[in-house]
Length: 334
Image (tube, rainbow, N blue to C red; front, side, top):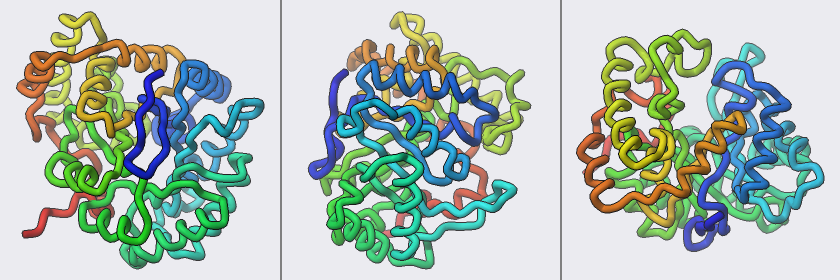
């Protein structure tokens, strides 16, 4: 497994990370035994970066990872945890809490559920508009001094917030959606991160399965997050599946699958970028790992750029009700 360093101040991790969210939440039922087997297969393949959030399944995902890591070399891994999202008993969203006292509280529960004595990368899941980012980062920095956290990350924030946070304490990486059909990071956020020496952990590299080559209109009734996603609805889905057929044709020529080419494209955007794959099953993980063997030439990248220009996808990547909470989606100011 190749390694990539997360920013100038962050850890060195595997070239691909495993996003564990779907094993507990948002994409319908998951098999616990298969989830743990998938985590084990990832570790055996050399994946060292595991990404989770304390609100994934309201703690379920952290406990699942904790169970999977029993007997494993924890110190060889990088566990990334997002915090701050508030949820009700009916699973609906209540907002975000990134106050310094909340940072310490959330961290305490995560350490317990994961069964570890420290978290490698700790990050607010979204910007809390009622708390200055400096206060949140300062509180995490205090936890670094106390030995409970190693590095600070950010998630879905814009350039101004990144700069303010980085001025308080070095930021290891920004976690943000990045794929052939989600290119917003290229407007200015990627440039800002590179200027400051901040790595990128890219989630949604398959656009929640939309560009994996496995999605079809027949699956669109699935009772999960995608049922509400604009890109999976109506005419938007028709347009986006047409894009996938372009990807399928390119992948066929390369002797790969659409998912493998999509992952390889993200990885090819820079050595400072680590794609997170959200595999819930061992077969999907094996397919994703095959992306490591896909070498895209300059000509291949040009062909993909022509097939997937920025803005090619139909529909926003999140429903409007969620986009309003995403600092990374704020319009650029002069």
